[in-house]
Amino acid sequence: MQALRNLFGAPWSSDVRLDGQTAVITGANTGIGKETAIDLAKRGARVILACRDMEKAQTALTEIIKSSGNDNVVCMKLDLSDTKSIREFATNVQQNELKLNLLINNAGVMVCPYGKTADGFEMQIGVNHFGHFLLTYLLMDLIKSSAPARIVNVSSMAHSWGAINLEDINSEKSYNKSKAYAQSKLANVLFTRSLAKRLEGTGVTAYSLHPGVVQTDLWRHLSAPERFFMKIAKPFTKDSAEGAQTTIYCAVEPSLEKESGGYYSGCAAANCSAAGKDDELAQKLWELSCKMLSLSWD
Image (cartoon, rainbow, N blue to C red; front, side, top):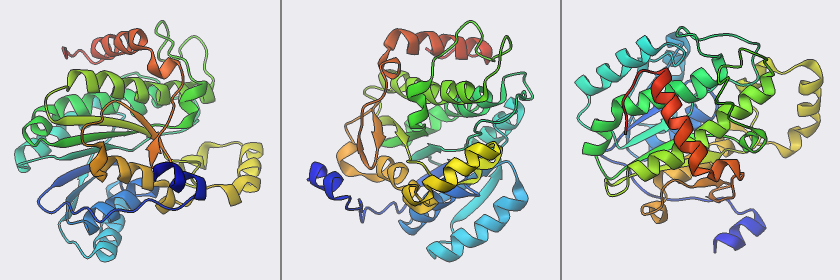
């Protein structure tokens, strides 16, 4: 059935309900994150929009409630480029929420000029990987106590061109914005793999995915030639609603209940790169991440 659907391009759909469940979605004020929020809210979930820009978040909140018909949607401040903000957000969730069934690590920055987070990490690895690593760590007890629960990490096919530079994870010796982005997306895949191993038997499962080439705000840092190329490619790209489908699939598809650690694309299991399956590299990245964030997470 899956193969037939892929062959004929039939869209995946599911009528799974999420009544009584709570979801956190990072970067939910725009693009894929916003479309994911609308879908989960339509399914009856309580949805927490975790956003850096609260003004944009409030606008999105109104739209999501209107589109979904569910007013159990709230926004909370989260700046993934600042560990202080991440800790404050996690404390807020822990103090005010009884459960957390879905954590959708969706927010990201893409091919931006060289910059550093509040804690001195290169911006792309800092937001896309370290920020979500810390957030997941801080929310883990609540997630485990809410099992069955799922953690969904939005990666990209760009992970295939990535390498993890363990000696210079913050690209301080040399910076190539595309390589740094690919590194951060490979980190998402490896983090998912490591997470799944550590969560075996807990009822919590983890998934990483490629959403497709999606027309989103992430394109804002592309150069003029890159934007021109994307304009030509536009008929072959997805809008945000289409781009959100694999995230939603990983979050709600019943057949994935016993699956964990895998990589998905087009609402189906997919092959990640050889580096994305490297358990030794995954372990080294895990250890480095703990060291950089001053955590102990076995």
